[in-house]
Length: 260
Image (tube, rainbow, N blue to C red; front, side, top):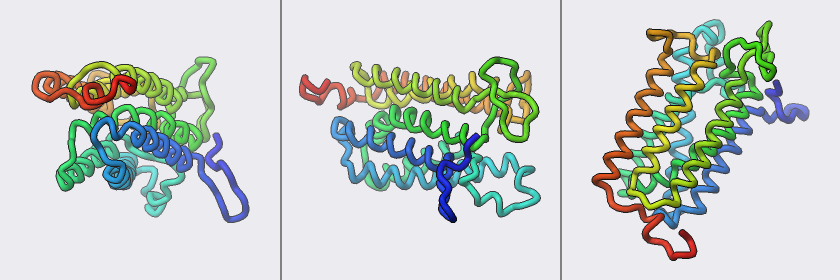
């Protein structure tokens, strides 16, 4: 593992925080490039991103600390050292969505267009950010004897590098969404497909995880499995409902032919 990317005197750049910033930066760069196609102003996009990222980090950290309190019981102040790793994705994602809905309602922005705009970018940013989890050694997987197993700090046997599984699967999701983005569709459908694909990825990856999924729900499934299934269901419902009731997406029906 390499939790510290650069260390010069008192100055330290942590791999975890650095890769999350790279992921967020790439996601925002990609979204800003295509924002005009969705009828979204760059200023609104930047403000929305700032609020969602800030509250997403807060929600992810609080949820992780609550569910993994045994790691912080002896030293509660450790919960504030976010650069050492430890985030609950669903906790962060949920609070970020609520923050986004608040901003959209406050500024009267095109909600489904923004959701579609964000979908591929979130997949890309998340894929890059998970490399930071690998560097920090958090969110590791269950023990394995496969040749690509990784010996994480504090372990006596190799484990699944589930952080890198996350990166690979979300890069695939990003590629799939880029292809779907170019096809005729209705507003909100791309976001629905993203939720379905992302929930499916998380359901699969949950079988290999161990670092933050110790609580078993029933039938060998974790609470992460159950939340992932809910996300898949919500995504399929959104894609179906938007396909029936939402207008055509601006990104495929309001562009010059050279930009489609």
